[in-house]
Image (cartoon, rainbow, N blue to C red; front, side, top):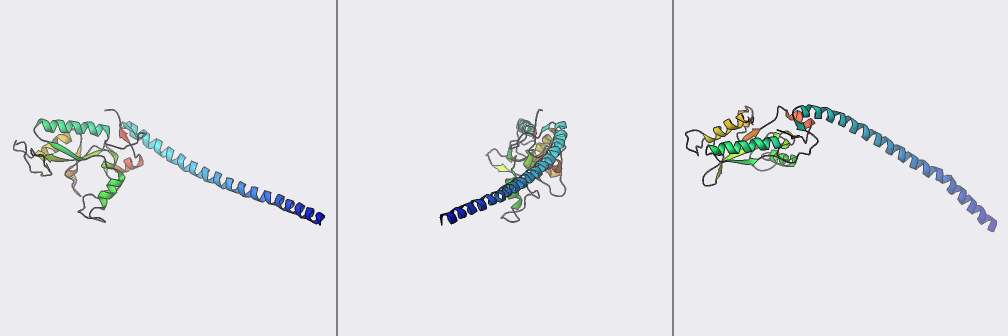
Length: 214
């Protein structure tokens, strides 16, 4: 009986010993699969890096820095905005900036208005399709002496016989802004943007860019 038990122990040991190579093979297979996945991910990241570097060179020529995470209004646009506010104030027009940088989530929410949520349609741009998403656009309105915010394009609040709205637009254009009111397909009268000659497609390829320098 003791001999039989020893035989069983030896047999069990042999069985266990024979199973170890099988377990090791599974580990080797898992490691190999992991290595393949890592190689594929590395290749994808390398391709993206090459594309990003190419985009960065193009953006750098325009004075843009794609290494900075964009989370607010572009510094160059901010300076032009301050100039606009100062110049309009100098002729008695109080301008209020009602919107500037807009996150992708905010853009999608705005796009859903009049489509999947209540309200009227106010934009045709989805997330990533607006210059607001890159900190390159602002929206404005006028402020009356009583403090009321209005979007009246015919108002003459400074009493000079001219439409305040168009005076703001004229000054903005002198500063380099493009006016959304010039768009023929979907005019956006409060909208001003400073695109630096970049299209939305170019910005999408080099997202999270910000103006640096003057």
